[in-house]
Amino acid sequence: GPPFPVFTRQEVARHHSEADRVWVTYGSDVFDVTDFLELHPGGKSKILLAAGGALEPFWALYAMHKQEHVLELLQGYKVGEL
Ligand code: HEM
Image (cartoon, rainbow, N blue to C red; front, side, top):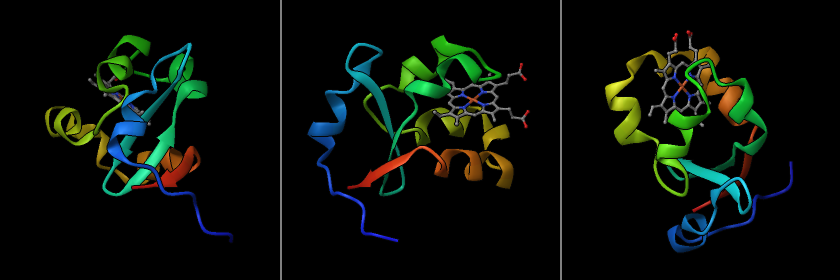
């Protein structure tokens, strides 16, 4: 497929609310998970804790995310790379 646009962490950090779209990073990938907020089994508020930044510190605590089906779901929301 076509290359993804490249963003800085500063640009990602601007997307920290539903009004600004909710972006997160995982590794060097950037995701817009706004449309997933209402679908999250752990609730919208939990994702908002990570909004604009990295998932890793949160997923270190909630290790149920480190499963193939979760990572595949996340890939569907990819919008760019760092
Ligand atoms: C559960 C996806 C971010 C907390 C889940 C599950 C999925 C998911 C698919 C169900 C997993 C399973 O049962 O097999 C995501 C995605 C995220 C995200 C795509 C990134 C946007 C977060 C964050 C937190 C969190 C940042 C915590 C701050 C939880 C909790 C559950 C859960 C507590 C368990 C809910 C339950 O079973 O009652 N998440 N998650 N998630 N997530 Fe997330």
